[in-house]
Length: 125
Image 1 (cartoon, rainbow, N blue to C red):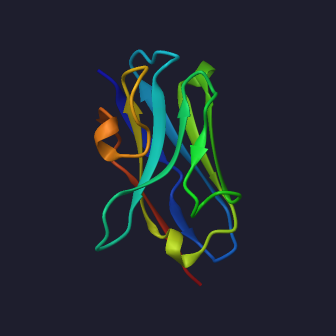
Image 2: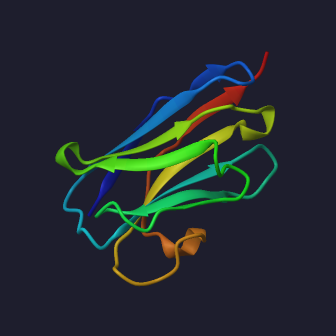
């Protein structure tokens, strides 16, 4: 069993930055995959970024590429999402997730087994 707790959300002006954190408790295998998703009001949850726990094979959605960066720190079991040049369209609840297997997809909700409770990010002037 894996438990995930996100933090770091808040209110930020357009063009600003935030760094989200997700602390994982429980055993994480290096070949497992970690991901960030987001859900805006009235919209479906969408893929943002994903990385293997070993630190390789990172992917970012086209909508956030060159602005967001996913990373992790194995020593403290923490996943990060550095978000720069934030735009109003980035307003959403952000969730971290774990795919508890070495194989499988990475950009669909059904690919992941464990989820955090989410943290709100609001981009507004």
